[in-house]
Length: 103
Image (tube, one colour):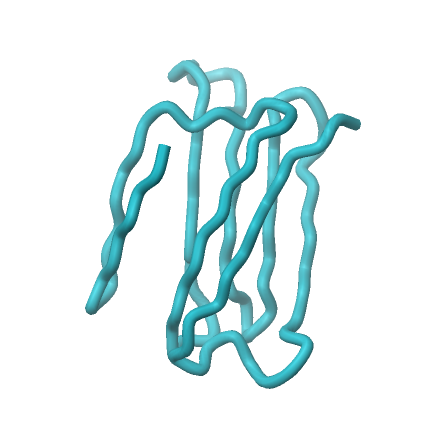
């Protein structure tokens, strides 16, 4: 599925059907001038109160890109990256590709 979304001010969109299965690939681009905030948040799985739902979170935290993945069967995985050059909150478009591999 391909979705194109743009916001001129803070906002969000809800999409259903996200899979966090092995070989799932998500590509997104973003541009912002804010150094902290949520870029992408996806929560999947059945709505059950006792079991935590699988999720994928992409955010900027003081200029660092943080990706958190919880598949429901392992501990939450966290990856933090800083821009190789410049900053990620410069108002320019940045591209991110996330792929879930086996393991």
